[in-house]
Length: 323
Image (tube, rainbow, N blue to C red; front, side, top):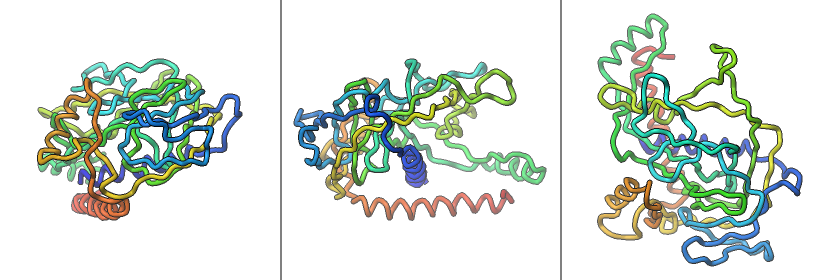
C-alpha cells in the first residue's frame, strides 16, 4: 500500500507538471539556463555555447542549474528529508509534531521539469494505513445515516517511508537539485508562474482565506490524536507563465543507474538510508544507492501495486456501503 500511494502521488504530480506546460513568455523576463553542472565534481555537463550537447543524467544525481531570471523559488518548498512543506500555520487548538517552517515572502509556483516530470519541492512521507475496527463500526452507522465516513488511520513513526524532495536551494541565478527518481526523458526546463498576492477565499468566513490541511499526512495519528495539523493558504496565480529555454537531456533508465537515498553499496544500505533521513535537517542526503529496478520495471510494478491498492481500498468501502 505504501508503494502504491507513492506511485499514485507521482501520477498526480506528473499531471500537475503537464498542466504547467505553456509556450515561453517574453524573452526579457523568462528564465534562461546557461549551464548544467555536476554538483559533486564541478564538471560542466551542458554549456549554452554548445546547445546540442545534451547531457546524460542519472535519476538521483546532484546537479546545479546556472543562469538568470530563475526568480525567488517555489511555494511551500521543504529541505529534502522528512520535514513538512513550508508556510503552514498551526490552528488555534493544536500543534503539529513537526511544525511547518516559515516561508519567505514573494515565492512563486515555480518548477523544474524533466520532460513532464517535476523535481519535487517537498517531501512525501507514507505511513502504513490501517482500519480501526471501532471506527469502522461507527463508520457503518454514520454511513447508514448519510454522514461523512472516516475509518482509515495511519500510525505515526519517527522515520516513515519517504520520497524525499529534490530541491536544496533556489536563487535567481542558481538552482541546486537532484534529478527526480521519476524522470525518464528530457528536456529540462524551468517554469515560473508568479502569484498575485491574493488567496482563495473561505466562503464560510467572508474576508478570510480558506485554510487547507496537507492531505498527505491528514490521517497520521499518535496517542489517539492527529499529529500534523498545520494549515496552508491557497495562493492565486496570475496569467503569466515564464518558461526557460529547453535543454535536451538523456536520462539513464537502467536499475544500476537510478539512484535513491543511501550509500553506494554495503549490507546495511537500508539502515544507513534511514540514518540519513533522520539527520537530513543538518546533513545533505546522499543519493548513491541503485534501485536495481529499471524505469520500465518500476512503471510495471507501480501499475500493479496501484491496482492492488485500489481494490483493497474498494473492498471495505463495499462492505460499509460507501459510494
